[in-house]
Image 1: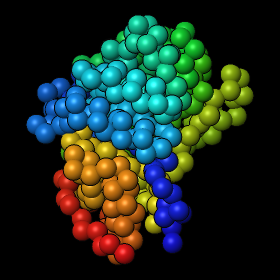
Image 2 (image 1 turned 90 degrees about the vertical axis):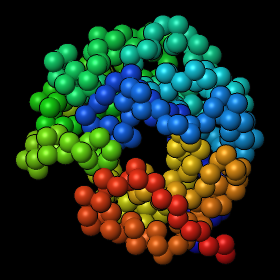
Image 3 (image 1 turned 30 degrees about the vertical axis):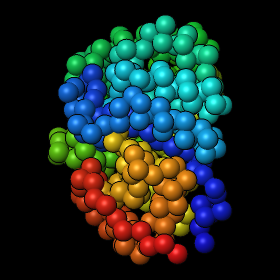
Length: 318
């Protein structure tokens, strides 16, 4: 019996509101980019019904992400519906559309964190990795979050393009008052998988990066959490084999994935409640086919490239 079998609802829902985005990042794990909105994404009314069901089900914590969640017309309606119900929120954004008015509106909600991606400390490097992006806008977003008294997280996706600026980005995160810096080995998913030979750091570069993180951890002022464990997707999957996460990963069309690095889908929230989806998710983790797929993903990193080629998995009711 897994720990998740004792929970009546997931502890965390990661909800990808859209595949649309205002940037075309070379490392994007979800294949998001301008104009990439899926034809069957949940509409505003459907999204509101799902938000209400999440709240009713007793889910304590939700991350709204994408794509870029702020390009979704009903983003605030969803966030405010969840917030009014007491659901803690995390917002994952590139910061391009995040200004003081957005910060002020979110400051009225129970925000656990706002996570901004800073994949470089110069416009040249940031713009190469995040095509169409303005580093100045991302920095302004961080300041707006800080000035509104909201908790700020910084995330950094290491590539051959930006690793030489990692130390500067950590220092920048401290400057902005971020409480956490998130990183880890680049995930071979989505757009990153297609550009893998151009973006994936070498093992030597990763060793140097780990040394940068170790040095940064010894700097006590200002304090910041350096989060880079699990280091890789494979590390995360090994842990999940022992204890599946109490998380539902909801795709823009309402489908629920078994794991981010696998293509398997186990539920459809257009047709199922959160409670039913949670049951299907737990049953999927009891299937030997899931464990076989996980072992393959652990043994063969290249298989992660198929993670966004969604396939339905059968769940056996027990």
